[in-house]
Picture 1 (cartoon, rainbow, N blue to C red):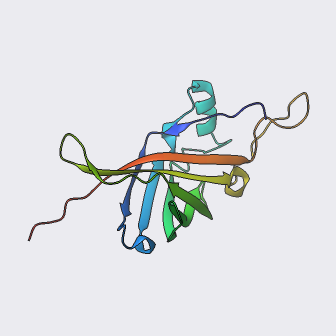
Picture 2: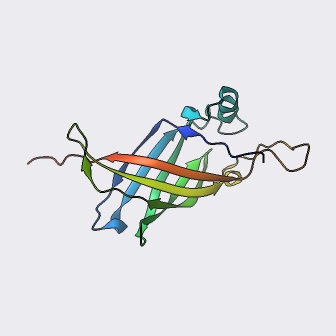
Length: 159
């Protein structure tokens, strides 16, 4: 491994049902358009979209569906099923830096949070690699996940 490469996905959609008084009842359902991967290097992004990695033609989305949420001292732990590259594995994520609800200038109520985790890409069949002249391989197996998220509170229906 030479260095850390950071990337983003711009095609993220989903829903979160969250009640601060009942965090254990939280549900999360998210979908990511894998074709929106961006590492600020067109050639690398093209390779990531190829059959060597994400194979976006065959697996255009990855999904996450929570199975368990628990409060911790300063945030929450979320367990759920991550489906990537046609493989579903349980992952554990930590939710931290949860903001209080706030109204934006347009009257929308929002909340923000940072979510972190780590997965092994080989667990999802993403095993392409290349040896380095000095030994080792060019890509590590561990992938650090970090999401800075903002949620829009749904308006209640008026009877």
